Amino acid sequence: MTDQAIRVTPAGWYEDPADAALVRWWNGVAWTEHTNPKPGLDPSASGSTAAVAPAVVAEPVSAAEPVSAAEPVSAAEVAPTAQTPPPLTRREAIAAEGGRQAPDAGRSATGVAWLIALLPVITFVIVIAGLYVFAYVAPSPWVALAAALPYLLGLLWAVSDSRQLAARRFTPPSALWALLTPLGYLIARRLRVPGTGPLVLFAVTAVAAVAAPLLFWVSGASTVVTVPVRVQHAAQTQLVDSGRLSSVSCPPVLGSLAPGTLFTCDAVTNDGHPTQVWVSIDSPDGTFSIAPSIAHGAS
Figure 1 (cartoon, rainbow, N blue to C red):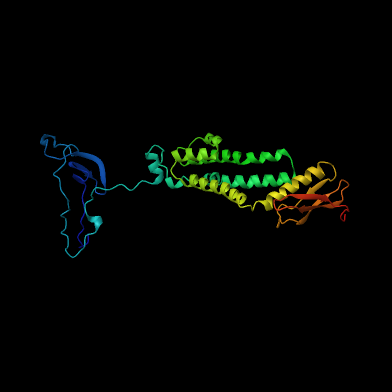
Figure 2 (cartoon, helix red, strand yellow; figure 1 turned 180 degrees about the vertical axis):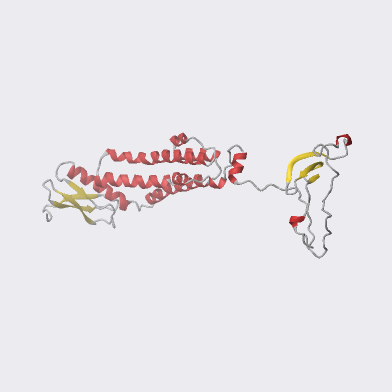
């Protein structure tokens, strides 16, 4: 043993840091699970160390050697106090709660929920594309089935969103609400899951998808699109359906609708030769005349 004083806490019974009415056995290194009532209540049972604890010492110190005043005492040399258990890990906390975890409101917005919110704009784009295909590519009633595509997408995305919310420990609405339109699903979703973002975005895009075409129509600017569609339909009916031409394709947009404006549509004769169809704008309201070219274009 060196000349330096060493402060130790020998094994023994000391006041329980967690309960002042008890004493707990300190094994010289750490607290154990053994406890007893404070001593002095039953002196006749002093034959067993485990039965009766010695006098409670607030901080027992070995008196083998005096502690030098010049030597600092480290925290490891002081008698132990009640130890606070370390915080539980995320996995341990979930296990302690029986496997349940409180949902995080910040994780309620899924990617498919935002896609559902954009469905009004997606529907507008699909309808415009379907009308173009019907008027200029394939005038078949089967093209009208494209209008059902946004409805099916909304249903599929609602199923995916409901599953993702359940995986994040939310209580999601039934995806069957999407059968009442995507808006119905988003309303039911908001009643069960925090977060109004997708519902608000759906409302904004719905207003934009309706207001923009309506404003375009009221302002009269839509005629540069609607008149070519009417021309294409008339050329298809008068020249192709009647058997005079094999096909005809007119410009989808006109730069001017002034009376006297002339433009041409590309066409193909029944024997496969390219030709043209002349179209003239006859009045400010968009009435027009159609005349097929007499001579064939270059083959």
